[in-house]
Image 1 (tube, rainbow, N blue to C red):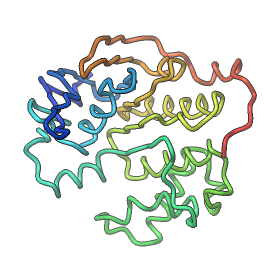
Image 2 (cartoon, rainbow, N blue to C red):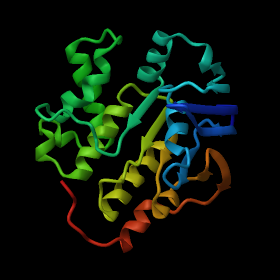
Image 3 (spheres, rainbow, N blue to C red):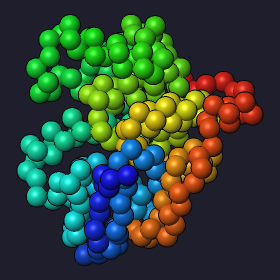
Image 4 (cartoon, rainbow, N blue to C red):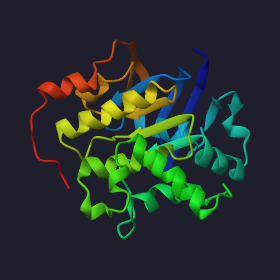
Length: 247
């Protein structure tokens, strides 16, 4: 597989008063196109900073980051914004859905910026994304009418509506119970099978086992990097406890 994400001797330093905090320390990493990788580590290990750099939300203090062969550090703000909207899809722990807006309207939001699509075309794209995550029949429901797992599926539909090459998820199962979290991981596995590069941040071992690769961090460095045979989330669901989904 061709390297899609390439970080070369990346260092990220934050200034806190007169103290410097090294969040990433001489980190070199490659993630091939189409791979499903999980980044794991304790709080403060640098995994969220790494996610922000990969997602073009933050720039390295030094070193190089190349995304699909383009050196991100050389790009202007408008170019970075275009990459974030067209190349990368983001999924967050707490869904970040607009409360008084339907599922379909939430999914349409990324299509409002720079696509030039008509309202009818936006609605069609949003419906196809909702169908892909199994929620076409909930298109007119607002977030408070959906379970936690359904809300996360809407958030994933929003992330993929622009057909991104890269999907980034920060603790995507953190607000869900075990069974619902595995259902979300099954969806990620299905998306990975369609050649989308997926990188998730998680602290849950069971969730990490669903990825093809586990990258473990400590003190801003990679201390473990294992390619594995992922567990099939749909099989893990058989033994997962039956618990009520959190709202």
